[in-house]
Every structure is written in C-alpha cells, then in structure tokens.
Image 1 (cartoon, helix red, strand yellow):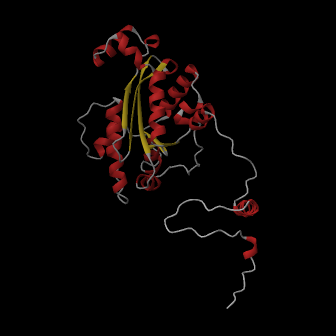
Image 2: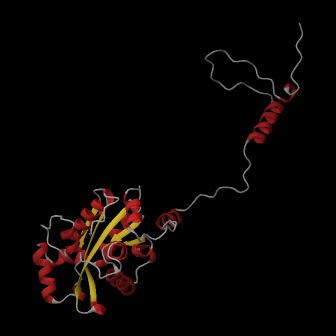
Image 3: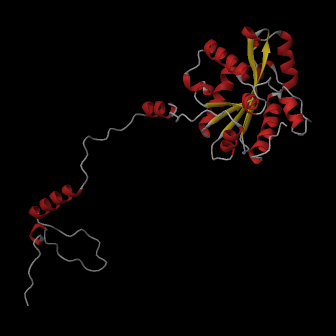
Length: 270
C-alpha cells in the first residue's frame, strides 16, 4: 500500500534513523545541510540590531544610577499614613542631631534610622574636627572611647556613603521624620558644602513624611505642634530613654507608629 508524502516533506532533508542509544549526529548531504540551516534560520526570531557587550565601567555606572521612583500622593492625613504603614512599602524612620552655633553654622552630629516593622537600622555619630570646637572633639572621644586616629574615620562623607549603601540594599519608599524642616535645611547645607553627588542626597529622592505636620493638621486642627516627648507622654508610652539622641528618638517614633498603624479609628490625641 502506497502512502502519499506530506506536501512539505520534500522541503525536509532525509535523515537516516539512528539506533537506540546512539547519540552521534547523523550525517547529512551538503545540500541537505544547507536546507536545514535555511529552515532553522527562518524559525529563529529576527533581531534588528546586534547585542553589544557592556563594558565593566559602563556596568558600574548603570548600577550606580538611582532608579526613578513613581511619585506617590503626599501623605498628609493619619488615614493615609495608616495605609502606608500597613502596606508592603519600606518606611525609613530618620532622626538627626546637630552641633554648632546658629542656624547657618550647624552641622550634622548624628544620624540614626530604622525601617518600620523590620530590624534593619543604623546609628552613626559624626566626627568632623574642622567644624568642631575642642570641647566637642573631646566629648566625642570620651563618649566613643576612640583614639583621634580612629575617630577621624567617622567623618560625614564616609557616614553618608554608608547610609547610601544601606538604602541601596533595601530600596526605601518613604522617609519619615518628626518635624523635619530643620533636618532638611541642615542636610541641604552639608550637601552644598561637601559637593555631594545627587545619588548621595537620598532625602531629595525619596518621598518625605513629616509625622509632626500630619498630627498638627489632622489631629490638632492646625494648632501648635506637639513635641515628640509630649506625644510619647500623651500616648502613655514608656519614656525610659533620653530624648534628643538620634537612636532613641527613632525608637520613640517607631513606638508611636506601631500604635497609629494598629488603631484605625480612635483619635489618639483626644
């Protein structure tokens, strides 16, 4: 009984069957190899341009370039804040302490941060002898128990690079502080004085949340702001840690946020 060949069978080269277990490539006639190569070429996706390998230098520049973030609506109410705190977003609580005389001669002395709901945190004290009075330098050395040569490794440039790496390891969606207007003023002044690149000025690239401003407009009807110490007392939280130390203030803000994240209805300041 004869069988009709498929209409396309003539386009395919005849290949001799292989024995079971035989993994060698079957031999083809030169004209058949040409047909097979032509057929495979038609099946491959066509590229408009060839891929060019990226150099190591360019790869480093690409990796160092911050990814543009989508602009989110401003967080101005307690309801919006609760939604953020209960979302997958990473909220970095940040607090700064300063030294110096006067608003225009103030420098960052300490930076502490913690991601809300997680354990990742940092706490850096800055030693900048060119901007510090002798008594301030001595206080730093006594507090940290460091030698002078060890202390000069804690300059502000090094500290900001460390924080930049911290943020790159776990991208931050919101930067939350308590009454942040002076913090931002000092940070912008330091950035201009040290001529930091844009990627090091993380506070200019992450959406900001000012908890004190939210409470003023949404809970206090625009009246005077309440201090962090007073807020902690009003909420009945423990106040066993000294205030105005960055790592302690971050801990207090974290406790406040835990309450506001869980209580969606009660006005906690009344």
